[in-house]
Length: 341
Image 1 (cartoon, rainbow, N blue to C red):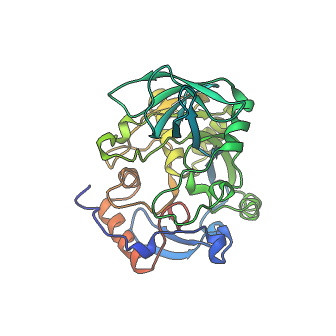
Image 2: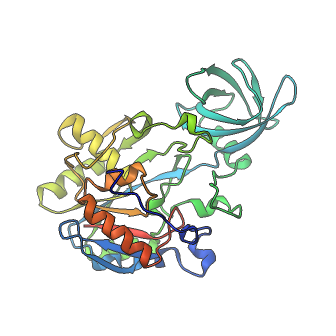
């Protein structure tokens, strides 16, 4: 797969700003429609999604809300400045986090504000992460994080776009460090139009973790990346009903694919469940639930492309991606979209 999917994305095709700042509505980004059987592509805009879906289809969306995970702080003992990047939420008051600047050690108390502190309760030479036990929990902790933090931004982003640009319109449950970006292009208008057509909509939650650890030494394979998920009973029932009717389940994002296929592999079918997944989906994975996928444009050799190759033959995928480059599609969270059906 890696040899087949080596391609180069010109720098000007990295989306450096949200579509709204390029004069577009969020649902007017480009959309490449890829037929997973023939490899044929059709090029349109995302707001025309309803033309490609039909009554009885079930769209499954990730309701996770992006948190501003970059936090400035000081070590209580000596005042040393430290930048902390939240990586994975472990429970109501504990997060795995990446210290970016400054030297910290187990037992240090980190002060973020007059009301928010955290104690480093675990540190290991085997991982760049530390475990932070905050003095607040639940909504009180999230309120502080939202007051104090900044969203994670990568090197292709040249301006500090605010957190609103890193949210989907339907996100409700805070916990993702990086935006589940496949859902970003949806507007409420498009969602209502799809429902009017008879397309049903359901939600899961998977909280995305920190993917870029700033040092290649710590690069982790997808099977080492554990993320927390929840499938509500209502969603499980809708999926079962859809499959029993012979209709299509269309995942919005690789996070949704990983969540649904994790539970299906464990239980033989999708049922209400919560847990952690490190499922690594490749071209050899037989998908049990997902019939289609809505996703963004993924970087060369990214593990997400392995997941896409479970839907469509990699040679067809490679050809489609080269087509997208020729058509000047934009990459990353503010970029264009791909529908695989």
